Image 1 (cartoon, rainbow, N blue to C red):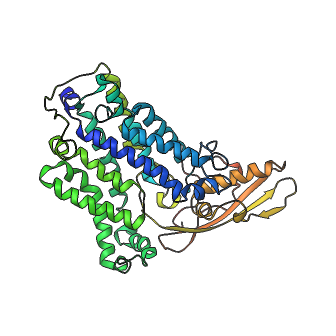
Image 2 (cartoon, rainbow, N blue to C red):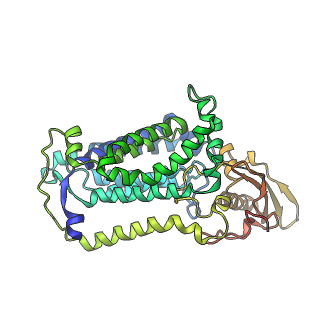
Image 3 (tube, one colour):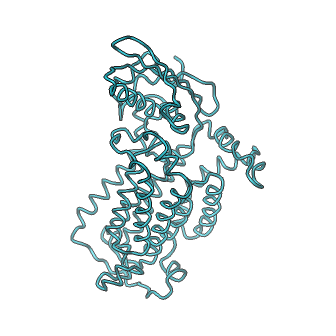
Length: 438
């Protein structure tokens, strides 16, 4: 039964077309970062970047070399699209993309994380077996089919993403539309729709529509009678997000996933008419069956468990942000804050109030005033900077934060020396004060 479900071969038109779209979007994301100024703002202008904890050694290349870095990454995206040296190209793009994702989190985005995961998944896909330079140069590589697991890997990954995104919205500030209202306020001057986006009924539609869409879209796409309606709903949902939130390639990548939900005959007829259609349904069990099932089994168990880690960490993840990243908690809250960093030189006891403008960009300052892990990292950064002048210091941070427009509350314990405490990855950091008063 497992062999029939995983290793039965079906027509590979969906995977071939997805590879072409995926490679094109990787190229556009790379060159778009150059021409929109994202690289300059995020990777070149700041003196340093806030990397993921443990990856502080990953920093942007000096000068303007990050432009070259992204240009090379774009070339690899094109190679994936064309199916040229596919395996090498997707691994190279995936490693370069992962490095830029891990080296900065001022522009943290769940979609960037998803693209990193997809690069890993695409590495194992036989996506260059047709309509590719590789298949043209090596006829023995050419194939009209793919094993059934190729489809279900994408379906399961998307089911995890959307399900967690839906469940995460089930909390009071989302349900009473507070979050949506805060998200829509900056859009008031949008052409034609600005005023509409301020209407309360629109906020309710978006809040509850978001929960229903995320929670039901995968089952509705899998169920043939509702598939077309779900696809049209996807078009509206993702194009709306693209226009309102300008979130890069993700809406179009999400629409491309629909390829794996329609019948192979439909995808073949629409996109690859000249390609012979495969309908033999052979079951071909590879020699690597056991390690393959083990590898993907471990991967998906990890994907299911990782977003749950905040449940074993004390306090509310919306407040502490411990367990927030890599958990598909997308556009869930609005935070603002203010922070005062006081450096005390141990030898003399003198105190210095740090001017954030001297160290951080405006975007970095927002993170250093609201996000505990960034606050801790900046304290470590200050420690290293003062050590260059042979000064041992303590760093005390007085930070207050407002979540979803609520009154400001103290986030950090101002009496704890953050320069000399360790970061807790899977535990609550006690210097983060409780979200609710005792």
